[in-house]
Length: 222
Image 1: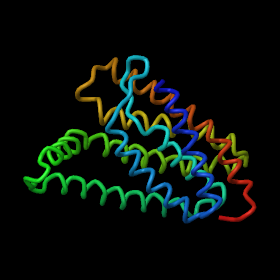
Image 2: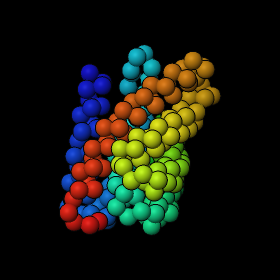
Image 3: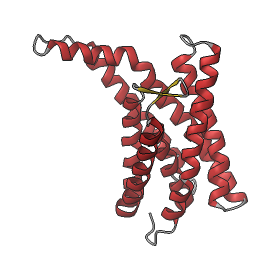
């Protein structure tokens, strides 16, 4: 059942991404990347069980960040690469700072229970939010150069996307899991979580190859 919901999440994310790409072009893709980065960071607080291993949510929606980024590279080349990583860093830093500051404010007596729940959720799970942001931005930064170099050597979308997906999924999975589980998890749990997260991420990204093809065939330029 968890895998079914994950599949639905992936399909909806890719469909909406194509709509945004078609309707709002480059500006829409930038907004999509930022919004999904923040949404996936919140979703990562919750985990689901797959093969007796707890996997943080957000893999489905956050994978569309990678695909959206590759659509921009395919259409625009290198001109957007520094811009998107800078925007992601700035927005993420502001977002995390605001979450921490809001949790540190003195709560009112009104609706005291929900206030305490909010503080507990943020403070006890802030590492998941930070891990999601760091892992995605780092993997995107590495992917940008790899995807573009593959595109220059042989301009085949499936080659660029699949080979860069192998690296993106590997880097993202290792960074996220090490930040969230290295201290509290056993070596077995850490390794199994990395493997399952990597496989899920890779499958989702490979499915996204068709999304890049469709977006690349839109007649309107970004």
